[in-house]
Length: 124
Image 1 (spheres, helix red, strand yellow):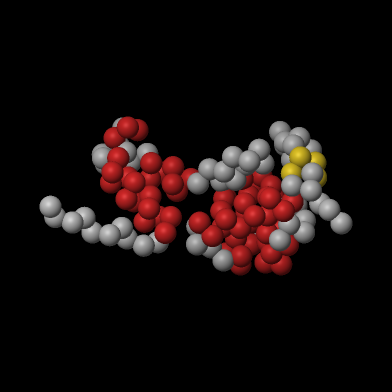
Image 2: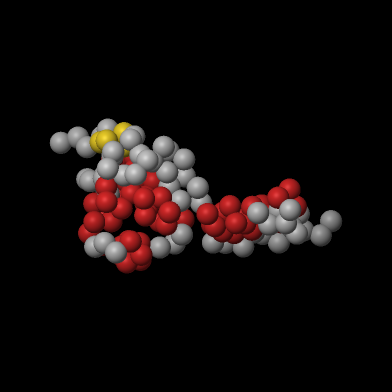
């Protein structure tokens, strides 16, 4: 049974076709970027942890929670994923009116993405 190309017209302002497997992969990536467990995402959305697992495996499309997923995880049905925390870090850069130099912003982003501090700069 293929669930690809499921229309989601019941979601306000969305009349797009969704590939269940691709959406599931994006849900999982977005959840893992936040370092959340499936249980934490389920609790945030008010659903069961088994539902989250089924979404991530592409077994079903989370029709009733698509809007909440977009807000909580920053994923869009149109394939655009926005990491809100990453955007907040980017807003710290001088190019966006923030106090940090772009190199410092890039180091913070790397730390955010990997969870590992960047290697110390070598004194020349």
